[in-house]
Length: 206
Image (cartoon, rainbow, N blue to C red):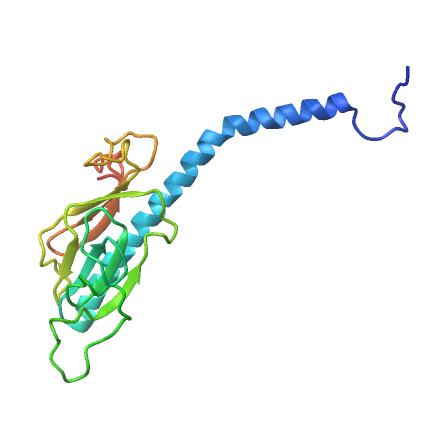
């Protein structure tokens, strides 16, 4: 029978099989955690994008000294409608319904704003790193005045992964997947928080 001497290099077939089996077991154990991490990253990306869009709308309202809207829409085509369950968003001066595919544009100088035109500032598609994410908004449009205050009623936007696609709300706090909430006050303060945490004990809580 052949035996391995000190001058022989490499691994036996049995050793290779054992190593492969160990790696396969470790990958199997890690797969669920990796899947949760990826989904949580998508949820955070969507929540960050909505937060940034709202902050842009508020900043533009102050800069322009006029009302500016942050709107969730079902698509970004010219067949779009406002939505409370989509992560597509449009920042514009007027209602963007039916004009989401238009190019960004400002009102002409020294000319009254045409209420029939949206005057888009910026848009973001839900496909930008946010697939498989659910949005539940208290309203589809948030309007800020020239002082940066909210004209529309205060409301929240929840970003989560629903337990069942037909659910009307995000799952209760404590689900293994992250649940982010964007809140807007009447004064125009915009904040992102985690409903799974208590604000009394954690500054990131709601």
